[in-house]
Image 1 (tube, rainbow, N blue to C red):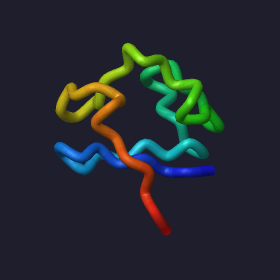
Image 2: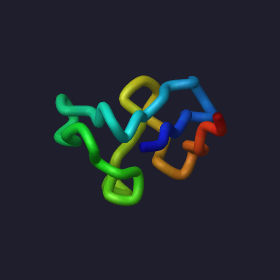
Image 3: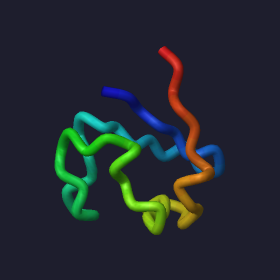
Image 4: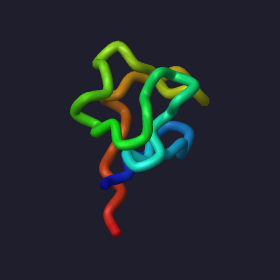
Length: 54
């Protein structure tokens, strides 16, 4: 599972945790997150997220 970070505010989306409050259960892959989804902290689009390199 991977993590993606908002380039504006630093919020991280973790595929293994998902965002159940946003309708994204644990295990939801980034590719399966709807294009209409926005960062819950700052409201930018999915396009403003980058893969977190480990």
